[in-house]
Length: 404
Image 1 (cartoon, rainbow, N blue to C red):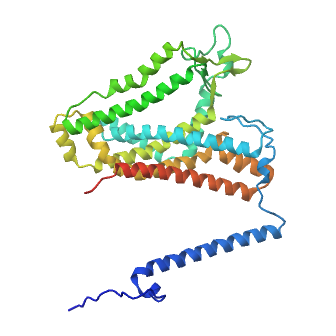
Image 2: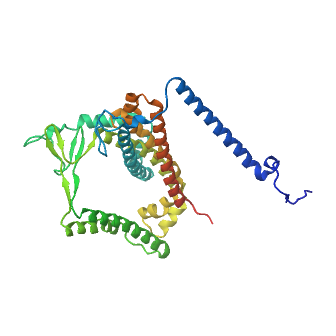
Image 3: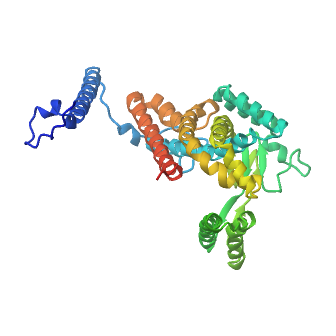
């Protein structure tokens, strides 16, 4: 027969750090942390000492020097006389642009393909299975090169748009598809344009609020409000009305052929398009499997119960299956977003000026500051990866199963 003794009520003693289970775990963790700090300190000191012995010192002064090279696509003002730091910022913004666009499009492709893989239509499900297997099992670099080659070979040169009877015509007279990229109209912001933009943003918020209210009303009372056309009307009608009331304050700068290339408008370069679509389609194949697994993790009885209540298949998927499947889909989805962001470093293969090409490529080769450039690259990718993880974990906590 065991005997239960009262805990020691005396004062704290140093020996309790090892003998008392209340403190032992913290003691071991503190020791491990100190050993880790000591190891990294030793490695850092050793690195600095060896560099000093070789006549090298870690310095980031090269970031203020002139870059001396041009960049094909920049979201901020930049020329060859700009600093290396400005070139690095151009690369960072280009990387973030690809990451954001890629994550959005990969999610769309993945959700559609994942749902259609479970379709009862044999042809549709087999086509989606072929898409998933084809793109998952071929390296993403190959797809980047294939899409870039298709664009540069199959699309016409800008000179084909010249003349009264050109070989190619612009789509709706506004968009030109060329082997150098796609040229689209650029917005011209006249006085009053910001009112239209603010109205549009508020309309989007109102649309989300309406959908949340409609879903709550459905769950509380069973009354089903229409979702599709009211959402579209709330988003676009107020902004369109404000646009005409203010006298069309937003204009369009349409690209026009001048010389051997188009002038005006916005150019979406072929390297950006190839990288964007390749990463999206490749990552979308992995997301499709995550979505399929999440849907199949939901009990089939949930679908049957919803159908028994008279819900249509689309409503069952949107209101019953997907909300429960998200708690299975989101964790691996975070990893896919991180992989897409890091795979964007392959942009140098098609000449897209991301941060790896600018800071980790040309700047590194011209200045010889390999350690500094690599450290900055590591810090950037670490920061963006932790940011994506933090944002997605917040969303994951909001959709995970709440237990009583």
